[in-house]
Amino acid sequence: MFLTSLLPTLLLALAVSANPIIVNRSPITLPIARRVNVTSVHNLVRHDLSRAKALRARAEAKAGGDFHIDVVISEAVDNQAVTYVAAVGVGSPATTYDLLIDTGSSNTWVGATQNYVRTSTSVQTSNRVSVTYGSGSFSGTEFTDTVTIAPGLVIPTQSIGVASRSVGFDGFDGILGIGPVGLTLGTLSPATNTLIPTVTDNLFSLGTISANQIGISFAPTNTFETLNGELTWGGTDSSKFSGSIGFAPITNTSPSSEFWGINQSVRYGAATTILSNTAGIVDTGTTLLLLASDAITRYRAATGAVPDASTGLLRITAAQFANLQSLFFNINGVTYEFTANAQLWPRALNTAIGGRANNIYLIVSDLGTPSGEGFDFVNGFAFLERFYSVFDTANRRVGFATTPFTRSTIN
Ligand SMILES: *[C@@H]1O[C@H](CO)[C@@H](O)[C@H](O)[C@H]1NC(C)=O
Ligand SMILES: *[C@@H]1O[C@H](CO)[C@@H](O)[C@H](O)[C@H]1NC(C)=O
Image (cartoon, rainbow, N blue to C red; front, side, top):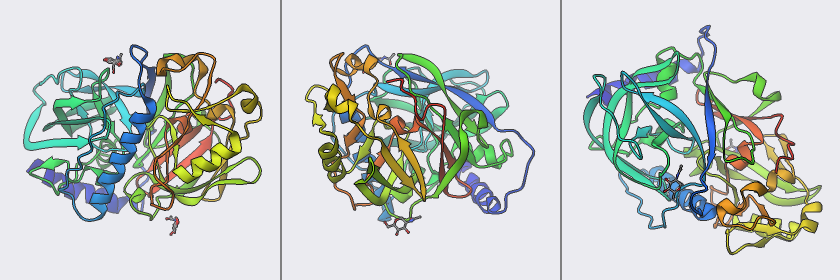
């Protein structure tokens, strides 16, 4: 079987990476577009919560040794209102698909909106594939095909899913899964115990990139569609951040340890602890910054924020905004300041999520579970639009750096 034969290659790549061989290749970048869907009102909060619940349930099942479990979560399906999308070619000649960039899952698949076009490079495997994301899911057949991420970034034989059924993905064609490879366990059947090397793993084992690493640059915006993001394979793009990158090891705490999970603490203003040092995840498939319920209670007490019924977000008054302090994230000894402006939903986009034009909504939202459960926050792209992020598979660590947008007042 093809997939089983890839496994030793992957293990070899992981073993080699402990003593990196320096290959003289430059990192390759791919532009990513940020899109806000305004054609119908989306429930941002419900989307993010359903996702968090499903990611956690799946990781807990896996940590418990049960790769076969099908986590069934019956939440309403909410298409994402805001997405980061990359144009990726599949096949030869390539058909271009708009894929959502997801660090919280690791399967790459197409076919949600635009049908998969078979070419001479398409090979159907005997496996079915399915993944549940909480507010959406897909199932279909696993293929191998040529994937072209950018000129010079081609994987001749990438294992990809081809959806025959998908929900929650209107407006884009599938997912580019760049989470840890372990998240692919249990997604195939009958080959349940098979890992599917991610595009990053394959680019690294092919020698196309010299480091098994990704750098992501997002930026805040108040427009509906803009090409303001960038994904760099095999390194980082120093033009997108300032100063040095602070790294934190992948947390040991389960279930966050299954993801790009880290330990962090969060303080409000000079001295109010919101969250003491605890584990959670970094996730580009989540829009908001989700914190454990007890942390949100403290944040609300400190800011005066109240829940807003029509959007599900927290809301503050203009006077409360004038007094809003920064949040300080301490990640492995480095402090990252998340300004008052960073805590706001872009006001120009209020009506796109069912809010009122003049209200002030916050992107800090309740995760719905208490802290101390090993999954106490999700740093979604509201956080990642303020800090450059690095996902380093070889060294099992996540890095952050400040950017020209860290202190932006764009909201
Ligand atoms: C926007 O969302 C609606 C409802 O979820 C969906 O039907 C539509 O295809 C989406 N459009 C785009 C451009 O994403
Ligand atoms: C993270 O925090 C947990 C306890 O909260 C601790 O056991 C662990 O050593 C910390 N560091 C890492 C890398 O997991």
